[in-house]
Length: 367
Image (cartoon, rainbow, N blue to C red):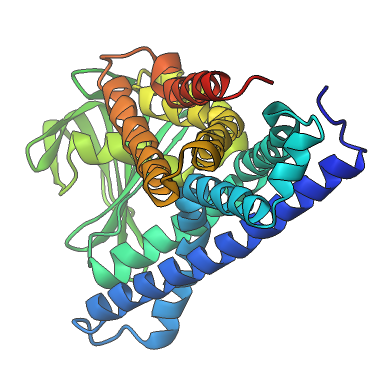
């Protein structure tokens, strides 16, 4: 029988694990943030106009994203520590001698870990997306010194902002033809260094070539001057097709709740949304992945009491966590390159970890 959430045993085990998880999560976030700030300070030392306050702001903005990255490891390590606590205080022995099976005292820990997974993809991920987008802008502006280019996609078409020798230009295309990267119904608005409108260029189509936008049937409209028509015009650019495509599919800057509509917009426009679809499915799989990490921790915790070698098996558990992490990244890469279906790329780590953990527990336990 599995203890129900209102039972004393369920609440007790869930509280112990939740406290251990929060404490370890806060500790690791602090350590990771400290090292990240040191790295940002090292990079900022090479730039004259970047002060400590800006570095601190960037480190704080990146914290939610790092919290999400380390969360699976925190789930595993806190579960290992919780089971070690119970074993050290002989509580596991008391539970087992009372007829409580491994599945009964695992259920509260699994439930808490899955609730954490739901919290991360439903609340923390949207917050992290907003913060990381701001961090990415500050990094490109102050540390990387990259050109301030912005790409946005809406139902009415694509908007693109890029710097020019006189200021900046905003390009709009009503539709996009892929994979040729030919834009149709193009409008380009030019602004000077003081953001004052200077001229407008309309074209029936445009194509991104090496270092230039090549426009056909262009009409130049300069206020106070007659229209100028030409069969062809060029606009210098530092953008590449890869830059634009990656700007559409940066998972860290897209919150969970806006991903479905943005994926639909990408697909309707003709862009490849595979990377974002995998990211969305991985977020949905987080609760099950966290539950599987608890099963892996239980495999480690159950065995030393009977067969010895606690340190060895703890190390095996830690290695198993890193294996799951690298397996997840490897399968994501295969899915993004269309070598693996999206569902398998996103859900395989959680499913495989659960199967391995449950299988090992079934061989070790008779309950």
